Length: 142
Image (tube, rainbow, N blue to C red; front, side):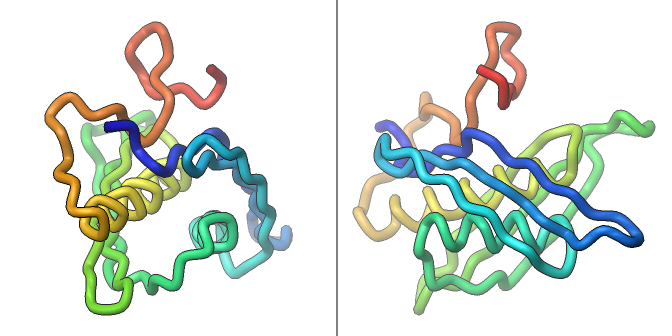
């Protein structure tokens, strides 16, 4: 089963004086959608842009970040729970960039929501919600 939502790109700016902005590009059933957003911080603006692109009515219930290894180049693992009506959709994302890992987690939760709604179980050999490069690592430049 091919996933409904796929993150194609996620770019953001922020800092101590910059207004946080993000642009994202996602595919929904093969249709590419681009959105930009302004908000309170990098994760907020990326989530807002994804929300606008997907048209979801979900609220973020849980946002949890942990490091997969030690060091400044550690991969971040982000877990989210989206409350969508009476459904809790769960997503996980991993990346060396915490904001990008957050975007993957949000997209994964939207795919979980879609699986729950359609009654389709997540297959063992499922295509991921993010592009995989030739080296087997997550790649936003494929």
